[in-house]
Length: 367
Image 1 (cartoon, rainbow, N blue to C red):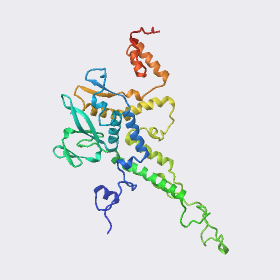
Image 2: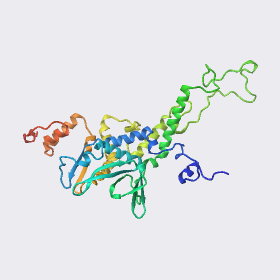
Image 3: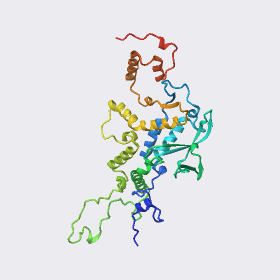
């Protein structure tokens, strides 16, 4: 009897007891296997690494100057983890699964604000919406007030954020399948020969016929000396060479880059045009505006929720865009002359030691 559903349909609706892959390329894709794709790893590391190393400052609502020190929970948010490590792991969970969970294990102060948050592996957490939001950790229900839940890619009526890996699984599976085909073909060609291949025999050659049948061609047929074309494998892999067809590999990297909102050239792909020094700074600004800004806002809101209602946090995104030395110094000079930046602020931006009384010195005359 013929099974009425295709393989992908059986997996989608969980019909039947045959274990099947989750993609048309017959490669299972989940957050762990997806990180084996170099484009996924590069995209996640680019976003998480760029944001986790940015300076972070805390502000009182309505005040322009930052607090001299970060609140204790931001200096050491988790046991044994620094703030950059904590932020990197938080972003990695959001980028791969669309959700991040933290368990508030300690509170302090008059308002019993969180003083320690331990990030949880998302596989340990289940969320149910049955008249109320129910969180379970390792199968045990916990108080929702003790769970710090950060969502990305939110959708109306959904308690959880959407998973980028689940939506990009076909593109990721295609890339993983292409890499596996290439690795197997290269390994087979380098370490072994075909079972029927004789020693000294070159692949792709045929032993000439001997005796009176040498050179004979069956009646009614002509000799076709054109080489046989082999059918490419998924992802542009050619079984005879084990190397990807460049266009298909670029297309796969570009597709994954679009899912993560980064430019392909930032993760080793191609931009499709010339990238000169004149537009390198503009490309960095584009990445900051369209690629990182949504994540910065999400994190600032999530981290501010751990503090008092009068305190907020903000990343210093200007650290990502560094112009050349001459342009930067000219901008500093213009700001000092215009009076909207102090010399001490310029020295702080340039990581130079403070000089007492430098702001009291009379500035140069404006030409």
